[in-house]
Length: 143
Ligand code: SF4
Ligand SMILES: [Zn+2]
Image 1 (cartoon, protein in one colour):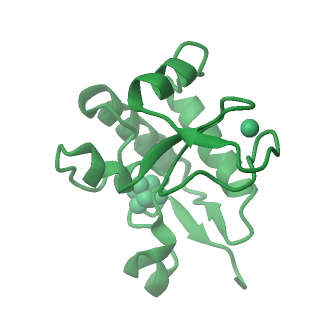
Image 2 (cartoon, rainbow, N blue to C red):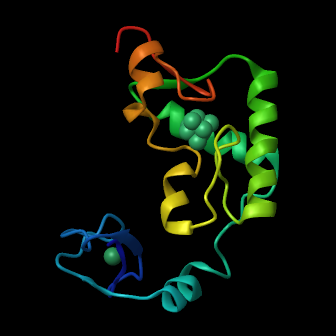
């Protein structure tokens, strides 16, 4: 089961089976100690920027796609707009920015995989037609 880890040098929080050997934020080695939910929330809570508008959601998606060698954002701007509203609605009603096209179970652990962007390159739809389930992210030509 995944656990929360905290870099004791820079307080970076990581979710995983174990802490990274090298901290991606400060570069310290073997610096991660087991944390817990309360501690992690306290660390990332207050000054953690909250994505609260559709524009911010889209900006986060763009940043993700721009740095990806394999996927880009769809050019259908209206779709992007609708999907960004959908994920925010899910955040407000279900607590996380869940995929607007899929159904959550209500169990956070199971639903973690539905937070957008999800791990869509493993989806069958992506392998077959080169798009995520909602058509938001598209495989780049030639990749
Ligand atoms: S299928 Fe697409 S829209 Fe849905 S969560 Fe995954 S990346 Fe986001
Ligand atoms: Zn660190």
